[in-house]
Image (cartoon, rainbow, N blue to C red; front, side, top):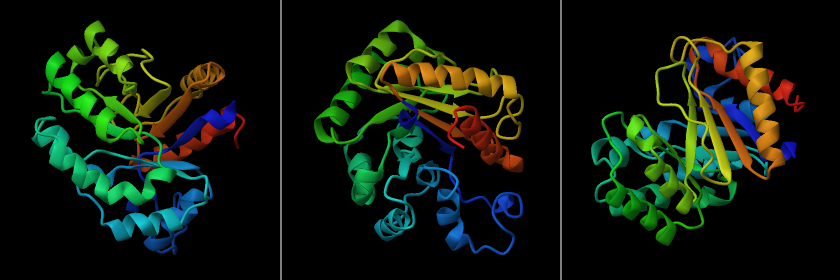
Length: 247
């Protein structure tokens, strides 16, 4: 059951983790192998801002154990600039880069901008395209507008097996624990100050219990800490793993 629960951080390339998580003299080229000694999964946060080269993706896959899993974040060109309109070319470009990583991938994270509201027909066309052309991949969606939490939206996610991301951020982002797919995906952005605050033992214990319940029901659970400032992310992820009995 515990093998269904994957815990890591939202990326690994943070200079401010030096001497806190990474040894002071460790070269940045060796950060990923070091990270993979402590965690079995990571988000690729940088792909949101700029797609890596195919060579870089191949290098990453060669630096981690066989059972290590990456969750790349969809390019903001599709989500924030085009707002999911005309998605064919951006999707082709994204997956041409990550094709060689497919067997070492968890869900692809699609984070929407706060200005993007739910529109049924346009959203269904997008989901249908993902299902038709990229059925080898899994998808989760992090929404930033409350309209995506209405029943019609959640029903559509369930129809296409799109996981709704549980965005733990205090009260900063829309929040729902509605399960819409086999994958349950949680992002921890910080409980008090976004990206810069740590979680209490009580909060992590509460989520550990939920994760074990969901895994027991047959779901795959993915949990990533995005509170990277002050290295809270690695500390909280390690604490959660200990609570789950994985450390």
